[in-house]
Amino acid sequence: MQTTTPALVVAAAIVDSLERPTRALCAQRSAPAELAGRWELPGGKVEPGESPEAALHRELAEELGVEVRLGARLLGPEAGDWPILARRTMRVWLAELIAGTPEPLADHSALRWVGSDALEDLDWLDPDRPIAVALREVTA
Ligand SMILES: Nc1nc2c([nH]c(=O)n2[C@H]2C[C@H](O)[C@@H](COP(=O)(O)OP(=O)(O)OP(=O)(O)O)O2)c(=O)[nH]1
Image 1 (cartoon, protein in one colour):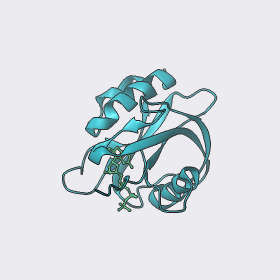
Image 2 (image 1 turned 90 degrees about the vertical axis):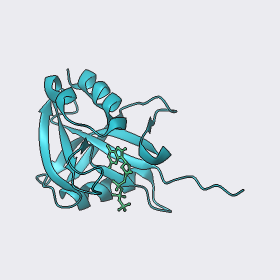
Image 3 (image 1 turned 180 degrees about the vertical axis):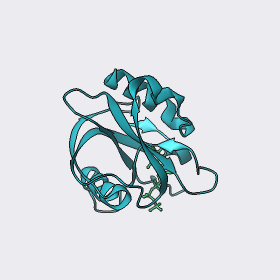
Image 4 (image 1 turned 45 degrees about the horizontal axis):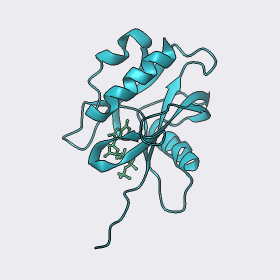
């Protein structure tokens, strides 16, 4: 039986400062209906022939209208990546804004800068909850 590997998902934990992170930019999904209202990290699927980093820069430009500098990866349990919905895997980088003011241009109904103490209070997508815990530790 032929199997296909689902596309890698990439996402950014955009923080106020890569050197001294204290807050992260969280995004509220607007679609599909079953995920709308839940919080996530901005990003999306890597397209064929695209590098993960290039995909992330493209998604952040499309979704938020920003350019970022990527920092360290926020490492998860699957060879550094995180298990997410639909048996996909997500690669997460810390990032810092270098151009633009984030706006919910596509896919999100709201954006919010959230401090370390409040990160776990958001209604995250279920697979993002451990990512939020890791992010709290980074921003603490
Ligand atoms: N962007 C993002 N997707 C996540 C997170 N957590 C999580 O389970 N997912 C899931 C939701 C979706 O099933 C998938 C990403 O799909 P997406 O809809 O954001 O990707 P995309 O922008 O490339 O959209 P499309 O071209 O397929 O319409 O990963 C997260 O923190 N950020």
